[in-house]
Image (cartoon, rainbow, N blue to C red; front, side, top):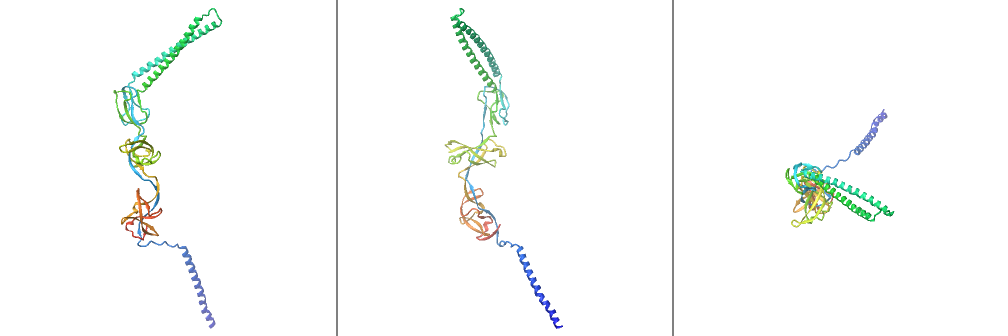
Length: 386
């Protein structure tokens, strides 16, 4: 009984350490596996980290410009004048009318020119008949002279030398008359064509499409050759004209791009021509710029004011920083640069402003991150979040 008791008592103590060892091993293994599955959490910013707005320092191409006031001008505009003299019969165009090329603007009284043309046509017919008669007579004289020539060769008794010479002279005279009649016919034909042209000129037509801006005469008024009838402007062929200071002309070569602002809108334009004449009073030269005006909204008109951004320096790569990043401290320009999660002040030297940014001469490099909001209350080395 004693031995049996000891065995019964000892077995639980032998099994227990084994079970305990397995339990510990399982718990440790499970803990390792759990640690491997759970990612490490990102360290939270310190409690005193300031919330800020940031922006990157950039390297970008810029060119300096100056504004120059210009105006819109039409490439085609001017007075449409009468090409023949006469009273106005009808006026077809009113101020503000849009016309196409060839549309009738006015008609002059044409009865006199009409009958002059008819008369010239009759003269052409008359001279044609006269020329035909001279040519027929010349043919007859040539035939008669040929017959006399044959008789002369056969030494016929019917041949008379004097008669042959007379016939030859008549043929020469008829040839001259035919040439004269032919020339006269061409002259009359030319007069007829001139009469037809003058008759056509009694109808004043638009030489190009556009809008009538002024009427200079009316029905019943007599106009002479060259007198103004209407003023026409092609508002679909507008370009920009500006008087640019002569010292800024060097960079404005044909094809150079500029920016033009019209009605609050920007449009790209190119230099078309630089007029080689300088105003001695203002020391400026006229420059013409071509642009696609169809992309603009709103009504455009001749002499409308525009602003042209004239480049005064060649484009170059510069370092630029947002204007809001720059602070004035004791007469120095500083920015707060984020380094390892903290804001560090840095002195910089700034140049000219370009839009919403400053050009940086030194102190920063492209890619630096600077504070643009909340930088007024920062102190050196202060942690930040954004």
